[in-house]
Length: 525
Image (cartoon, rainbow, N blue to C red):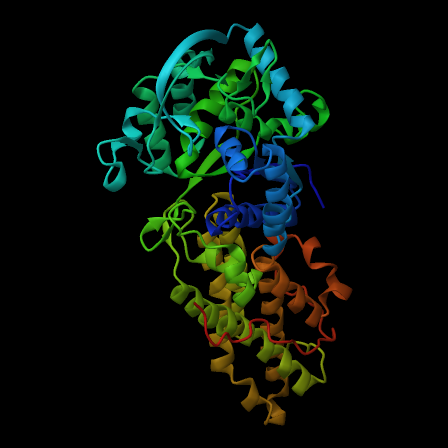
């Protein structure tokens, strides 16, 4: 159902030094919700995710586990990262690994192009390096350690000692692009989002950019520099290029032209790589910069950023095994303002699951379909005279669809869900006020009962479409119970931007009983 409007969205590619936690899953779900919405709007959508498998951190992790880096990466990808996508119902269109041949050979083409253009030179380098970040740290991210690392310079993010590296490396002339980057930020205020992230990047670049070391010669796990096989490419320079090597750069110009430029979703801790280094690289190569870079906040547990090293990492299946994938997707889409830090707690998850999903949405759907079965032999009644109360539901549904789409366009997923939930709340209130169970006892109110149940059932259609990018399993069950596919087609084929147009379900359409969408969870921890 593509109408040709391109929407290429990416997650970062994640390090395979360990298994994924819910911080990684949060990013994947956000990108997937956006991609599903745009697909269902008819846009030419492409969702890319993948894994970053080179660099010193992976080499050390593999060595510590007695295997080669490639063996370690293969194991983690197959046993942890790909299963996470399946667990969370992520519909990615591609999964790239930096060990893929399509990536490595085209990274070399890109490097050679920059080298031939005079953007790369050889030089000596000495600086403090964080293996966890795979980055030479700026002064602003170097602090004195405490506890066992007292008196030692550590990374402000990982709280681990920094290593002093001195090497002959190749450098990218990033300082040449300072003015062009500042002009980009000025001309395109929405290039970096949210505004707080944009301001941070501008302040960083205004302080002055240094040239970037883009090779390493002290280890060999990486893509070799094409003109000097004794060096491998700096892991970030290699990794950032996945966004173009995955869509044809260097070998499929038609595909590349169709997909690029992308919209990137990143964690705020890697914003600088994506909003400074990456566009500078593309400018040097004569390639269009991304559409946008959106930096979301951190997931906090007990007030701290999610971290495996600090034992605060929670595996996604610890949540999905109890609450299901839909609840995971809904909670992280609704409970956290996208772009801000957010705290995760089991108590909040449990409360929202029962109040909003089980009681608010799930119970609504079950009650309405049960009344269709009880009062109209399992078919949707025809509406009669429309009252102000019925028009109000129609108006709320139409407005919710319009406003939710606007919020999605601005990457405000939490706001989109808040708009959709106005329909849930309005329908629950409508049923309470209209009392269809009382109308059913009065034969003279038969026409009114039909109007009320048609209004409520059509409201469920609107909700099924608008919520399908977030809770795909539950909405597919609802769509099946509405028997809507026979009348309107598959749920994924419904144009989500038209969801609020009233009266799409035909009267007389048979409906079925609905299983409990969100069963009560007695306990969680």
